[in-house]
Length: 112
Length: 114
Image 1 (tube, each protein chain N blue to C red):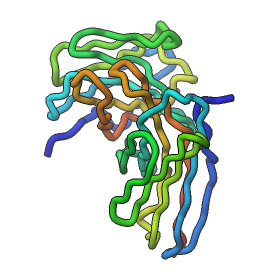
Image 2: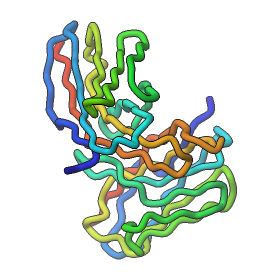
Image 3: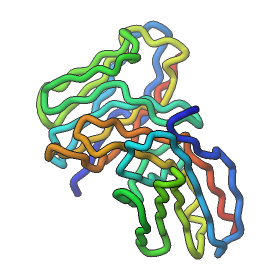
């Protein structure tokens, strides 16, 4: 079992819809959970991160972490065509030497 | 604006011809990372530096080397590129406060090997 599993998509939704992106993981030592957005041929850009379990909201984006189920989600409300990108989940432990483990990314298309 | 800069953005090289990719940062972060990302794959960590303290991942091929002459600059050298080395190469930086810190990525260099 891979440490981080993420459905590669593509996921196509109409503009204005709510988007749900998810990852599962196997390592219970992970404490930090991140979502990166990567536009085509660009570097990943950190959208938001969460420490341990719970929810975090930033504008149209909400991140959820359920450590008991080893499941994390990113919700995008009122999706826009400019949200079309690949979304990478990532996670790590809390130590300085813990590597970030990335998912492969989900390609998202928002249809105008 | 403080940022991570990578040059060149696109690099074409021939099979076996050495190539050097560069990264610079104005964030004054003392940790720097090199990742390799192939199409539809997760970024794969190649190296990282805590200041000048070099850390090599166990599965990074010997064909890849890195240099960090000062805090602001880091280089990735590919001694004899093969077709399988065609990828996006990402540089990232973070602070080092003794615990977990956010990584900030540059725009990447896309390497094509002919």
